[in-house]
Image (cartoon, rainbow, N blue to C red; front, top):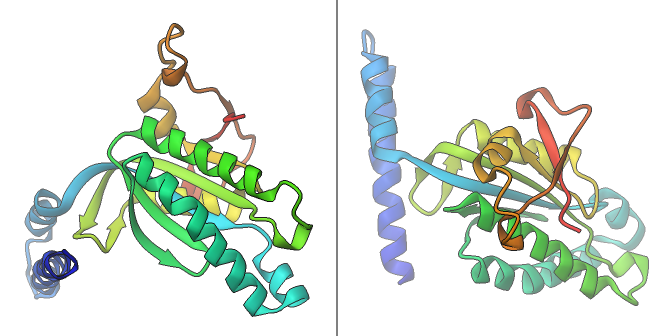
Length: 214
């Protein structure tokens, strides 16, 4: 399975590399090449970017090995939640995860479940051992390159919200996420999501909202 996955990723990366080389040639029809790239790799996904709050402070106070322990524990707790909600963990760098979901509603439910799992884990733990999760969520068309990475405006926005804007226990989402899930069906609580608009957000994220998952 891993071998087959690596072939698929390499094939996608190789194809993209060839198209980018064509795009750099003098006189290249960049509009046509861009259209080909979007035809090949353009897909609609919900993207979730997670980050752990207090990285620098905890490393300085307790050392890098202690923080590696926090990262290890966060993986143990959060990866099963991703799997249960049909997410795909594309990338993990340090204390951050990049996850994609086909449906924005599942991305939101996964984000809420991840926060609840962290809250349950933190009960009775000293402050330095707590997993404090920040989450950003975006949704829309993006370039997916095999099972290695995604690129696009909503990817950048979710990263900004999750890493730079969200505080511990928060799930912040883009306008596209709010538009996609709508107001839901009041008779079915699983389809209803509540949001409040943020007064200020990073320029790259545009209008954004706090998902009231509690």
